[in-house]
Length: 297
Image 1: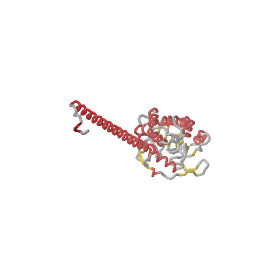
Image 2: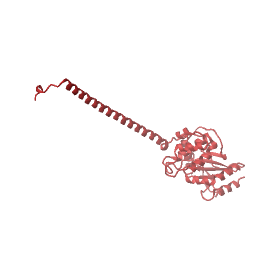
Image 3: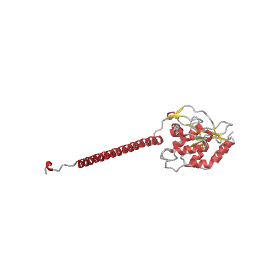
Image 4: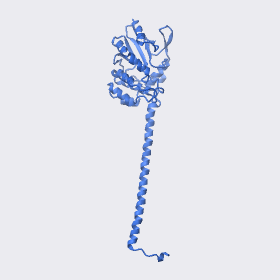
């Protein structure tokens, strides 16, 4: 049938057809708008995911990444990174003094061992002057289970010697176990937190170290988180060291003192010296140290 012969639509039919066309157009428009909204939402989701990856990368770099060779020296430390307890909970105090640089590590000196033979001795480790307390120097790592056992076994005796003015106790907190004891460089982060405490709350360092050892994580895992380290410091009474821990303020310092220790022949922890004589890490430490202390003049 030709168009000329088609029946003419009534006004009502034309209006109905127009409404149907308008409805179809509106529906198509709604579908386009829904599709555009979905594209927008997925675009936002993708952008957030990218941002999360970037943030995660930055955080991971802060935990696992490269650490500068130079950085600030915390207060209350000696030239080679030690913090010295002259009495229980009482550090030998000193102001923060300049930066350290790994390139400044020095070659080891030598001293006579108990048997009379020459052996490397770390810088700053020596027999105390006559009339002074014996010098006990302990290289430790917060991820080291043997260090934890040493502290559990001998902390009380160390306190007694300090109270009796028989010895001072110097800790050098290293990162020797990074890469082996945890997947997040816990040794470095834990040492950094210890020096944050030494810098701002020196009387709380012993409590921090003791609590960190008590909560020492299993080897090979992630280690304690920065948030946990901050919690331990706060519980120990050290106050807020949050920015120091988060920023890794003293990680270059930890790197420096560990490298100096390696240069001086310290390759494991605990490594302990009493008046320059190295304990063999076997037998009773109390008996070894007491003999040296008793022989002092």
